[in-house]
Image 1 (cartoon, rainbow, N blue to C red):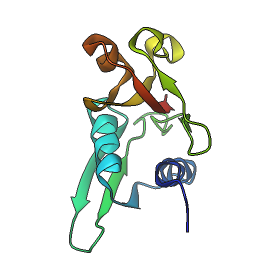
Image 2: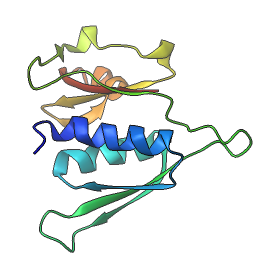
Image 3: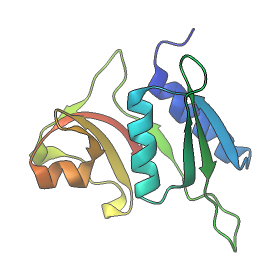
Length: 132
């Protein structure tokens, strides 16, 4: 059994991208659903579907690739805050990824959001991951 479900989620996406898969299926949770919505809104995945037919449910994610070069849109997806070492940032010290070309996903008291949204709402929180 894995102890960090968010790291497992990110690793499944990372492995599917490296294997050039079109779709990846991941066990669902509310936090994973929110991260998936953010990835879709920011244009890193093509589409997603929440399947609640089983007890836990699953998330099916269609990965996005460049049409001409067949390169994946997600170049790197990296877990920052881990169960053994949590990383928190206030609204003034939220990280800027690749000079604004990437996103950081933050878990705040107002919900899960990108670093730019958290800075605009003036809230800090736990830095979950970086995507670029």
